[in-house]
Length: 178
Image (cartoon, rainbow, N blue to C red; front, side, top):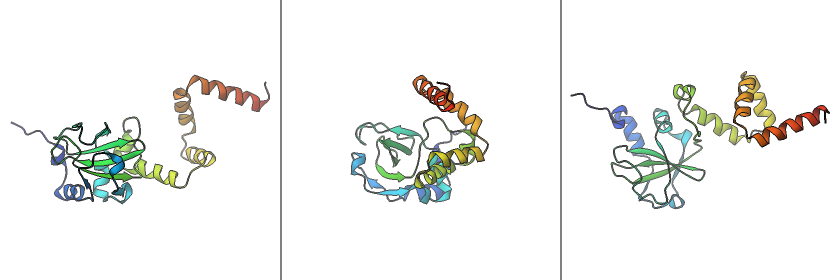
């Protein structure tokens, strides 16, 4: 009978040791109690992609709410704008927790590009946030990589009707047709 591979089977011993030996806080109850953190970009390169691909769970109210599956040892748990790396050590609650700073979780599933370059999208987003990028600079970046038409289409199709109506009126006013 073929053994089913578990998450820990996909890690090298070195990667597992790096993940389990971070400066975690032991058995916290609530994210507001967590004072230990690490910058996502400061993680060892060998585990950045692993951490970026972990299951994401929303914080339920207490780290002791038994909201995790002990078979999956590591999780990312979100609370407000914060992201936490959790090590269950085989339990079904967050036994060890550390806050990950500068990790941006995208709301939809990973793109193929993100899978091919784990952690890079988060790093780029972090750099843009750090430099407090403005609209003109972001437009320049989008045009420089040849994405203006695709971005316009995606943003247009995802926008609320009210916003599209307001933008159409603004465009007409700028062109002097109103």
